[in-house]
Length: 371
Image (cartoon, rainbow, N blue to C red):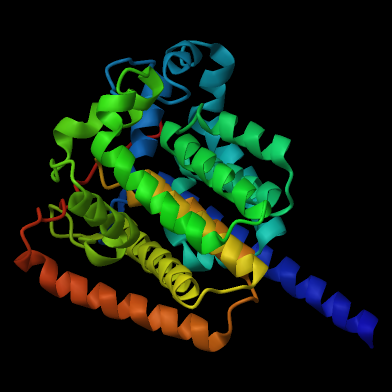
């Protein structure tokens, strides 16, 4: 009896994984064959992917983007093996990563974060960062410090912001393992983040790696003041922006598929933050939920030091949150968090046009040809 149940479970998992992989293949073929516009839907691609494809494919240095670790990126785009990895080769890497993630973490990623489906076709960093952060979080929960720090260093070669975020989270988790209250660490993380937001530029601005992460973006931030209230604005913005300020119609009047999938992913992100907030308020003592909540709070506090609002950088951390706490929150807690997230989403969409904040950008159709 038990053996038959185990066999049925394995078959169900295999069927789910196969279904998800087939869905990925369908998305991939639709993206390639449609040229980023099909069946009245548009914008199947994310901008970073198109930019990186052009850098790798035409070997152009005219794009202000660091594909792999700043100066190293300029070198790598001229190296023939990396050019093969770009283009079609990167798609193979992405599908390989998806198959590993499905086998290791199940279908939660796609169901809650369909944004990653539109990361398949182009050489996007998002799936690489997702894989790195998921395995990094696994190392942290199991106190595998050398592996965790190694993964943090590797992150710099793909996305420097996530390296800063993960480094801060690693330090907080080490202190948590030493017995310091996770709520105290979360509070201190926000205090430290606000201090660095206000004074970090003058204190640490001479350090190139720090100034590149913070100072280089100051001129294009719509919230220019470096004060604590504006840091709080960024905290709220990074946690909720994708769920509250998504624009679904593009410049041609078409329905943007990437906007729809990003919105669903944004609601999932906001739900994760609601769960973490609930845990913080009631001083949750469960190991998994307190660990994951601390991870999310520190990630949010560290990202918000940057003058830009970049909630997409937080997406892999919220995926890790759901993977870590799977089965540890009750159904009542999950439904309450989802309800709060949806309510905030609707409220935000109705009220942000009335607030003194810039309107979100309207999606622009970017034509793309694989060859």
